[in-house]
Length: 331
Image (cartoon, rainbow, N blue to C red; front, side, top):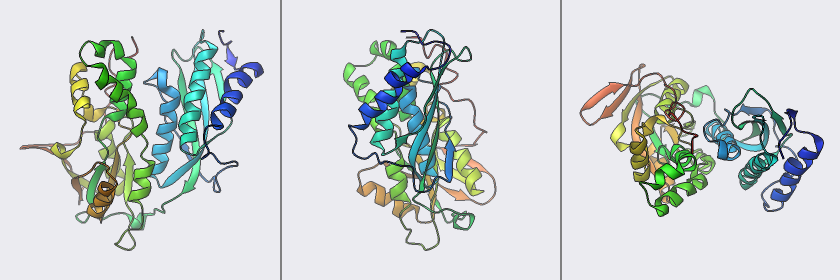
């Protein structure tokens, strides 16, 4: 059934929103009743634009990760779903399943849902607002100091972009890659949340009075994340690009499409700057997580990227390489 223009009517809201929340919620014991104990911490999550088929899932992950990097554990997610004219109700129902399953797996409640059909969009878009409680106090006096702080990268760069490419370009990729590789890359959605990494990294530092500064890699990927880290700390950077972890599959898939893996969406990766960065690195490695020291904070404003003997300076964040990829949504 096609959805009508404007806000979803009451029958549609019952069938494809409220009933889905109730049905999916029964599968997750972690979901708690009520709001977070402190709803003073809000995040306007960036809209999920690049993967219409997984827009619900990725919108929740984006909200969880951006809050986690600020030391906040999301407790409630309130989505706005915009749909183009002619959208079938099944599409809305599937987006709600994704939102519910991803949120409930993190112990997050679903707030009021707004769903609307509008000429303003040509594909499904999900925009979410999240709120939660702090698990890590951060203030300006706690910021790591230049020359004393390591930069740790937890999680391989480019996993989210790889997942999007496999979801949106599956048929094209089948001509080059085996089904086992593509199936494994479709499973990357299970590794895109950085909340467990952020919580572990933020555990009380052995150097009193310091907490890590964290940046979740979202739109613009690794390079955009470095720029944000420099802005948050007020420090320069000295980065060894060759030490940055990448999945071999990410390298091969981005090479297939001729795009830069360092500039595409990278949920699942967390930049951590801390005076005891090496201790945080060991802590994460003991749990079997990928964590690599990729550089350090420096005095001044220079953002140096070293790639072997080649040395250059980090440019301002450019458009995410996936956003400029022609025909991404043409299956």
